[in-house]
Image (cartoon, rainbow, N blue to C red):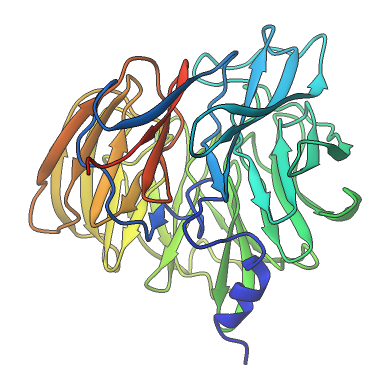
Length: 402
């Protein structure tokens, strides 16, 4: 029987100590081991540097070694770019056009043409712009390979790629066709492609391990599925009828995968991922229909599950039973995912305001509220003793006062 060492082998090439190489951090579920992070900041307080950005993108900063990578789109989405800043100074090291599209198409008002986060994998940098193109760069921003997928992502690109061993895996759920695919990360050639029925979705897959076996969990429109990562073979599927435009990334723990059903009415489901075939009627542990998020990904800390709804209702649940510990309305609008780091939870709203609260099941205990100017839909990253926060105008490196 294989153990958690399997997952370590499959993702070891991605994670580095002190780094945040992908969407939602090293493990992809919103956790960081960083300490001495700032509790309070403003546009000038506890700011190590602030780098102005051309264009617009909602990709989370990915921090590896001396580099801070993200994507942006200029010229109304025609120029799709990869940007690298120096982690110590914030100065621009690379800014390259990866794709140029004369007609990039329409996107949702809350989206951008550069929303999927960069994935940094030792020598490689992977960027994804949905149907507009996917590419692999080296650490000096030289393009190694490019590829394109044919599907109508309608509201624009959103879900980020993951690396599993030698594979780059992406969920591509359009309004016309839906599929999950794996590419050879060295060449960009397709290794497998598994089609599925449903609706458009914008979620990022998650690698988990169940009974010693790896699975890739992908949340699509109407269905969530577990796949064999090396072959793309479907293991199980769970249905939430009429769900679509799913954005939150799943989280896993306590023997359960926590899934969000998407629009128009969001539900949160706790599903046991140890079944085969259609597990809709057999493997649901519990569900929640009030306060579930449309966009922010959940956060699991031990036996407690934390969620924030798009309209600013924060809820703490018992992960095993779904029982509510507490609920607090903070107001505002939220799209970014929760971050757990340095014994705190960081929660960024869409207007540059970050709520910092304690991870406790007793009550909502607010520790600080911090604000910077600008619109903010990208999730916060933690790396090298700092927070990296992106707005529509700038990237900040925030650090604690010495």
